[in-house]
Length: 200
Ligand SMILES: N[C@@H](CCC(=O)N[C@@H](CS)C(=O)NCC(=O)O)C(=O)O
Image (cartoon, rainbow, N blue to C red; front, side, top):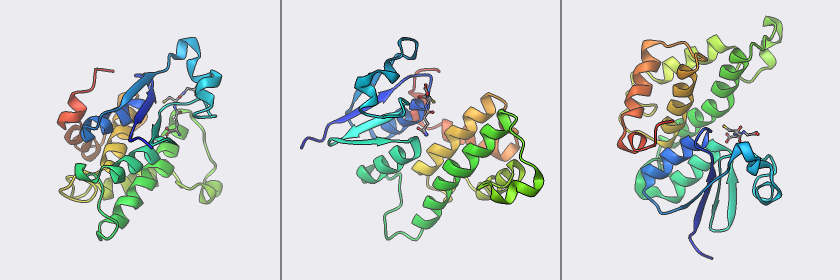
């Protein structure tokens, strides 16, 4: 088995988040851009990688990983020298997993439901994992305080993911630009690896 790493993406997609991660790692990889306009992401060759026909996806040592947060979490553990994940026995690991999953399950859903104007009646919100946009983003604000990052001083892959989502949300008016969120995204985006990405 080789250590080969293949990265399937499109520059106008969540692939940018994984691209940022790969820049942080500095590990060699083969990039495969799928042209959405030609439907390359729905062609049989790629559906064999991801039956959803969505990007990003990676294939590392012959194993397919899809879903941006899973890819980031996987890479942070596979390349521990980058220092982007607390070790399994590090007490900060719990908070790291907590906010990673919160970003993936609560922040993403709250943000997109709001952007798509999908209203849930107040009495049904207990059934929603994220409850409400207001509660979710109040929790985000608390998680970012005092900062500068989710676990304090150290930037991790959970920050890379949350800041990417919030940055996207701010750019497309899906997220309220509170001072804490704007400052957090600016801090994260100031990292050299993010600055090296082509403008998108
Ligand atoms: N749950 C996936 C979502 C991936 C996703 O929705 N990718 C979009 C681009 S950001 C895509 O490939 N859209 C093309 C399509 O579905 O036709 C993740 O977190 O990576």
